[in-house]
Length: 199
Image 1 (cartoon, rainbow, N blue to C red):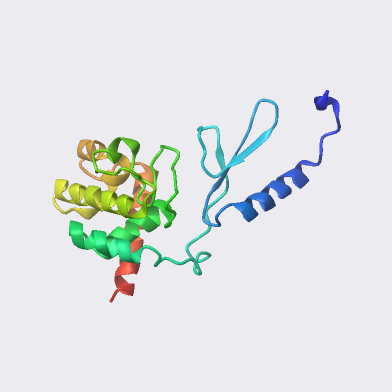
Image 2 (cartoon, rainbow, N blue to C red):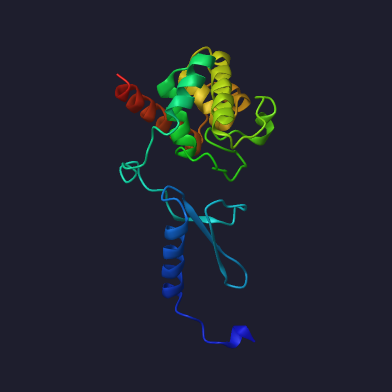
């Protein structure tokens, strides 16, 4: 039986897998790992189960200095004008949500550049969530709706984008979830950065 054979050195296997993922995956993607009941290690950048744990964390913004953050500026500008939302704000949302990866899919199933949840795709008139223009327009419309719903209070609108508007209304402030708190801080940080760049 295979199980009776001598096991290869685990460190070597892990090193080989890390090299393999580094060669085939985008440098900005988290890599997740889980070990099943048979002791087999599974790696992915799009976990489909809560069993997966972060193995390699997304590289920092500084490490991504050479990444082209202007690739979708023309689409962001178009959506910004059509929807009436700030260009630096919309760009900050995209940076935080997907790091400009149009094929990004979250653990919860959110898709594309602005990470649209499946239940919002139809409501936002999106046919293909992986089409950059459709996704950016949908995300811009949704964020604008939330800004209006929360009377222009941007931190609340951003929290609602992440945790859902009903949750924010229940708490009447940014919900005490680390993911949501971090999300709001990141979007506001990139908003300030892109605002300064556009001056």
